[in-house]
Length: 254
Ligand code: G3P
Ligand code: MG
Image (tube, rainbow, N blue to C red; front, top):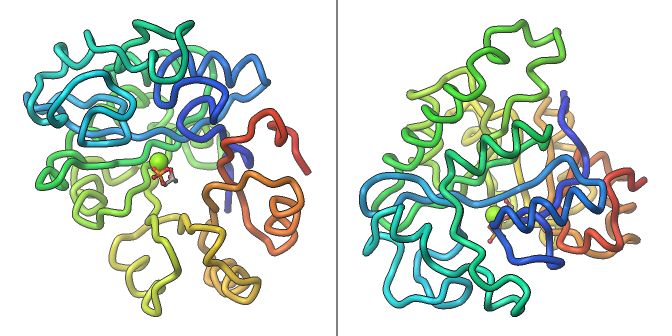
């Protein structure tokens, strides 16, 4: 039911490197991680980039928003200096290059579709198409072959993005991200044909976890940074989670 890794480095390398950068992925790999969550949105020209905030300024040293720039202009901006001088010049990654790098290094991906306002469907369509093309061979194998476990999982708070992804690449697995489980989670999951629910662990109860698992869905939590809490969630039947504290919670955590 959950063929993927159980412990993911959040935003690439957690809080040990600048988020959503290749430096972050490399830092996660040094810690032994071969599974990450990261965020993707479209630039002005419709080309996806790896970025969390549509409004620049926090991690990217530039004014305006992601849709004020074409992707290549974003890729020339500094997404590392905010974290530390050793990361000055670390670029905003183009999604295509970032995903290829992860695939080439055996790093499994939970790709969060994080559309800039108004770009929900376009983000789902574009990222799903590109991901399906990158993993075309794996998608052609039978689910039982083990190849399917290498295929990325697309997740989003945006149901419009997930629906668009479903149309663009129906065989790519999807997950619905929520803060707290809504009362109609079963209906929403069925309507979107998602494989999993991704829930804020702070809003999850043991009873809810049991209900989600009994419904046959995968259950993922974000963002779990304390080992005792991580152990408790796994005890509730949570399949997997992402963490910022890759120094405290390693890929083999139990
Ligand atoms: O995908 C889980 C988590 O990353 C969602 O929240 O804001 O860190 O992207 P955020
Ligand atoms: Mg995210």
